[in-house]
Length: 368
Image (cartoon, rainbow, N blue to C red; front, side, top):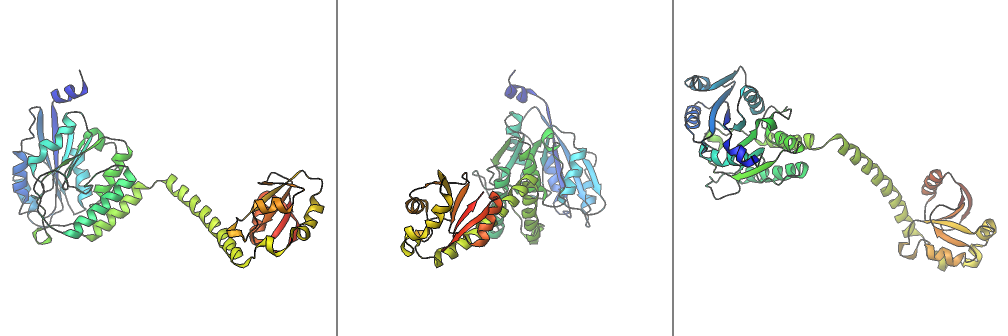
């Protein structure tokens, strides 16, 4: 039997986990709606798990009206959405875990589309996107939208996914997927944390379009700019691993060393006249020829041509015609051109070499 056919014939229990904080106006209606929701599959049953996150209003009393039909987790004090969800996941017994906010921003009529990729055996994780599909959306805050786009883009960069709505409140998981990750974030940092950690585990993601009836702050919306800042931190915290930091540190050190040498070279280029025009080769290089006589070849290290102001390999070969000049540091004697004394010391230390002769315009002969 194929995996797809087996998935369609299998009996599924879906746990709808509803974290609640100070939602006395909406929670009873939401629970009622969820209890009567039609998942759209004959082989799917629904279990409702409601977590009261230390509400200070009459939310708890409204939830208790349904205690015979739900699993109820009552937290003594408010600790955040992340804590409430982890508490709900612990008591959920479903094959699939689906998150439902305790307001009417998200419509339970979308359950069928959310569950379909998992039921058909194509996905382990499904996100309901507010930004794709042809469903209706309430028009609200521009800057919330821009922040969401930025955080989703950043999350995608570190998770290597191409989601359009990482912060969505509608998420569904196979129980094996959500239980494979250890979650720590207590508030809305749950969204980027669970995304990155599931992506790192290589679980299969799907995304479907959903309807969205967002609230403003007067209607009880709780997420704030502080949560956006926290989400940024969470993405960096869980998206960057130790290997990345070590690699980044090494690159910074290498770049700093190159930058230091480059600054010295730029100074040389600005100050140094054209070496071949200033000193006739026959006069300048006689001491070098005398020292290296008997050598078949000499190595050559230069700071670069620098528009002709630093001696290059061609100039060296022309000036020391009796000697074979080769770029590199394999020879016993090496000509160093265009470096300051500070840079020269670095080169000599690296090659375990000594200075033999110093000529004008920062031209040196060193011996290994």
